[in-house]
Image (cartoon, rainbow, N blue to C red; front, side, top):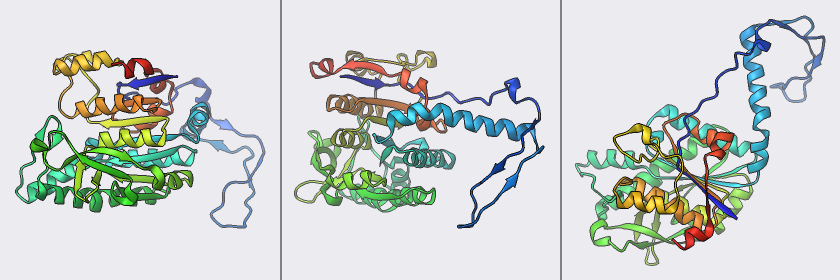
Length: 350
């Protein structure tokens, strides 16, 4: 079975149709309608005979109907499938982008998909570190985490960011459940090989999805903070991209989506026109060797490759600065068509 790695941004928006078919004032025939009533056990009968509907209202209503109709194939394709989304960066800092991500997740859940949200919280962590006069340090895109920083990371990610997201999703109409890697031994951590440089930065030793399956199967949205402990109970800060990839693999997810702060991968960092829309594994390794993929993009690319090799069908890195980029990636032909097919054998042998 082919796998797909999509490194392209979702930047398109859907324009309102200017077709002449909506240009006249419409008069609807005499009908009886039974609209939804706010009052239970009540019946509303409304006659719409010769009722003039303004052009703007008609166009907007028809546009919504068209969009819902055109979404049907994508809803059918992904209904019942698990979609793991890693959330962080600019989409966390800007209220309108945060609202966009939350509403997208709730909509996807309502139409039968099974979203799982994995989050970091770098900007919020940096904010609290600076309040405490601690300078954030990074090594190869990963946060250097000493014991004091680890305590702050755990408090911010598990106690604040996670619960804020759960509250927003619940408020939007879905049912979210906040977790960290330590809850139910969801994620078992281990220190990184270069722990001397990174401190309490961990890797994923294993994922036990037992606690997630009932939540996903019952239509809840798990919200997972990227903090976990090892066998001895020592807490570790784990890169959220890595956690998302491993959770996606453990759940046998249909799709892994990473939201990022940039348009994508540039073949030439000084040329915005060199944006890559597709890439294979050898190409990724070459770009890393040439330092064209660096910093925080390295764990993103690596976790996409790792998740594909473990059975996740598609992996995408998309521009989280674009409103509703999550919906566009899943509910449009463009989002699917930009996927680059990679044979599993080529991943395992690379």
